[in-house]
Image 1 (cartoon, rainbow, N blue to C red):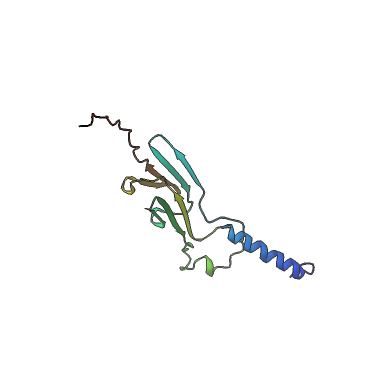
Image 2: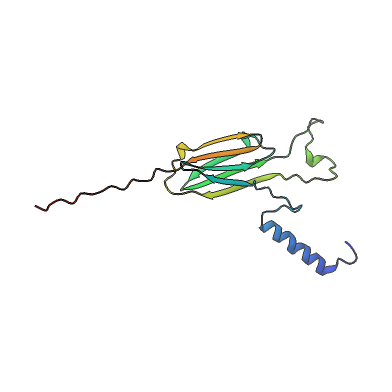
Length: 146
């Protein structure tokens, strides 16, 4: 500990770490949660998420009760030097984040989960969600009462 750090400095550091944790930040300031873009056309909602270092098998997508859930896991890479992973090496500096993330998005009611399509290329996930058909207004004829 630095001589000028003291008890109050330790308290401030603990508060900062709890604050970062509650905001979804890793202690090194990085977010594990992928950045997303949401765009809308006349016929569909398009969700695009950046997931560098992940493959299709690392990502799960589900829709339940008009809620889209994107779940993924970025695992520590296995190296070719005798099977040791990063945790067994004497790492001098690391800014990469590992672990499980979860993004949950509320969708408009009436989405048909079977019509949703997802593709992934170069670490970018694209989910296309067709909008539900809007019911056309129906004119009701008023008839003469019998």
